[in-house]
Image (cartoon, rainbow, N blue to C red; front, top):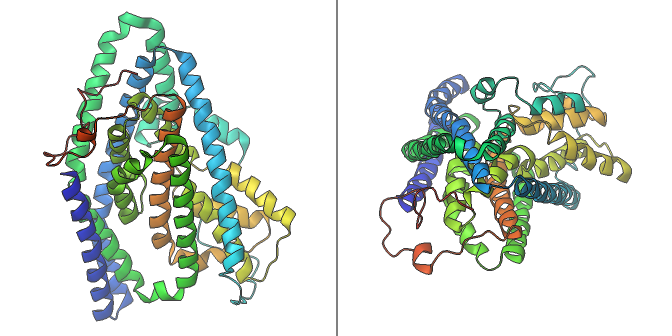
Length: 435
């Protein structure tokens, strides 16, 4: 089923491009195209709502049971520290790579845009970063509210408390652990049902984007987009090379298992949509659920490699377009600022644009410059989302390797000659949540 689904998603992607292109070419009225795109988006929105329906209970159940089976709170702290160490290192690489590439390619040089009026708005609501807001936002006022709003980081915090408490109570909490294990299995089965709608969502999302913007938009911003995607390819190479260096030659299997979640994230422009499948890919690779279910949700808040690279690339592009030069000191400051603010924007809609808007204002670059990239942001978001999936999967595998916990499956289990219908946990008994 997994391989078939991948081909169906690819077919939906190709058919969506063809349909959107045909609509754009045959319908001259832009308002009509927008209306058609809005109707297509109903399918995509429904699919993403189904995904959001799954995320909170899936993160909660897998994380609580994983911590409960660790049996050692010291292991939890050690895994957390190693995850943060990797996140910070990956963030520095992503931000720096974006900065270097935008200077090598200079996509904004030559546009010579006039500075807009002081009050010109970008259309994106910016948000200021404060340490107080970030720290207090970590702890949920109510777990029900956190789950209702899909605040992954808050769910992680509550799940850690609950998992540690279950470990402290011991045998008395065994019935509760058994119930939550059953919940995890149920959520994974629901995930399997939801994913069958993915090809339709991919078709609708791509059709809507191409119909509304038209293929010409890709040519207008081709150099900017090409430069950014070149950066993403280089970042992928760096991440996969790091995984191979730390994890070993088996890292190529991880890349193979990630094909479907990466394609799903790319097609829907949502890394959230790929979360359940990424968890399953890590499970197939041999990353213990207790590690993957802890590192992966943290990564969705702290380790958005593609989004961070986009922040530096797009910010300098806008500065170049207006002929604004930033000193080396200012650019280093920008890197440090983005390092912090990108962590404080988890869960914010169009988070990358919000972070860029705040950064532009800090360096007196016209925020209206965001209008330059808004038209192609969806197509760029596709690449960012796919890269975020790769980055978080590599982070989980690396932390598991550092813990000495990667389970090497038998060759027959890795690539079965004639795989039956997809099962969430190939070659394992039940959830196999034991360390």
